[in-house]
Image 1 (spheres, rainbow, N blue to C red):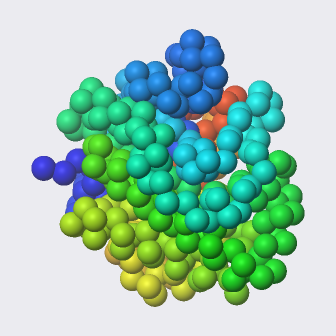
Image 2: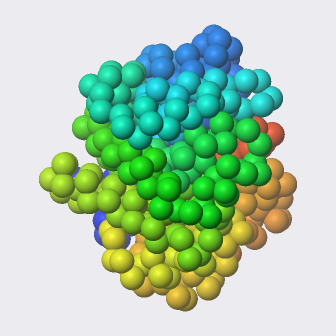
Length: 341
C-alpha cells in the first residue's frame, strides 16, 4: 500500500496534498541545535548515522509530515570524489582547488561507496524507525549545481569560474559526465538503503543560459533517471527542483520523463499550471519569507497555491528551504491549513 507522497508521485488520487518542507530538519528547531552542538561539526552530523537519523526524524515527530528527507548535504559528492570540503561558521562550504584530471578520470567507485556508507546507514536506520505510514526521501545535487561548487570552491555567489566555463560548455563535459555517474550511483545506493523516492536539487540552474540548458542541465538529468530506473528495475519516483528555470519547464516536459517538478517561489504558478500537462506533479512553492512573516499573508499564499493546483497532483512544499529564523508556530499553521484542504 502506498502512502500519500508516493501516491501523489504515482499519479494516484489522495485525500489531500502531501506535505513536507525543504530543510525541514534544521536550525529553526531547538532540538536540532542541541544535536548539532553535540556533533561538533556539520560533517560529523552528516556522517554519524545515529545523529543524522535523529535530526531526520525530529520534524516528523514535531509536525507529522508525510515524508522524511535524510539529513545530508549535496556536497558529499565532491568529498567522496576526493575534493575536500570544509564548512566554516558563517561562511558556508569551502572546497579545495579542483584537481581536474584526477576527478574527471575517477574510477575508484568502491572507495566512493565506502566514503558515503554512513549516509546509507542513516537511511537504513531512519527507515527502521520511521512509521510505515511515512515515506523516506533521498537526495542529491545535480551535475551542474555540484560542478558550480567544485569550480568556484564554494566561494560567494558570483560563480565567476562557472560562468566562464559556460562560455565553452564542451569543456565542461568531462566534469559533468563523471558527476552524472557519481550522482546516479549515490541515488541508487540511497534507494537500495530504503529511500522511497529521491529529489535532485538544481539550486544554481538559473546561471545556465537557456541555449545551454539541454546539454548542461537536462541531458545529464535524463541519463540519471534512466540509470536509476535501469539499475533498480522499476520506475523510481523522482522530483527535480530547478531553481529559477521554470520558464524552461514547458520545453523540458516534452522529454516526457517521469519526473515531478519542484517550483520555486518566484515562478508564476498559475501560468505553469495552465501551460504544463495536467498529469505532471507539482511541488512547491510557498515563499520562505512569507513563512517567516506569517499572519494573513501566509494564509492567503497557502490558499492561493492550493486553489491553483486543486485539479493537479501536487506536493505542498516551499519554494526554497526553511530559513533559520522561521517561527515554529508558522510552520504549524501551514500544516493546519494544508491538512484541512
